[in-house]
Length: 112
Image (spheres, rainbow, N blue to C red):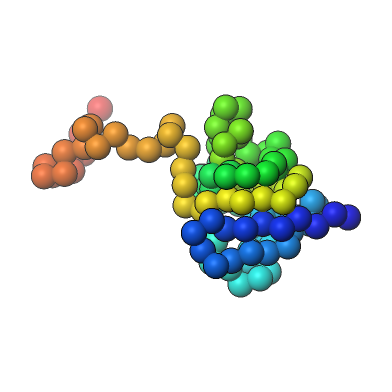
């Protein structure tokens, strides 16, 4: 069983994570406040940008193949090398385009 160092960019946090353990599980074990929700690779709450290194995350269904090259879901991602990741970074496909949001208008429901 091989352990890898996972460094969280922009934070003073580094942990050791086994290749057989998810990054989220290691965070919870070490008391690191990693955001998560579904824990099944769908909601993207635990998303992080991969700055350096590689992960295996075959069950990360919430990411496209292209997104999975640059982002990981910590609830599914297992390190294949030492890593540097930036937590709280989301793939472009889920970012809201500010031009499409009317911040001054009311939110209303419609009956379809």
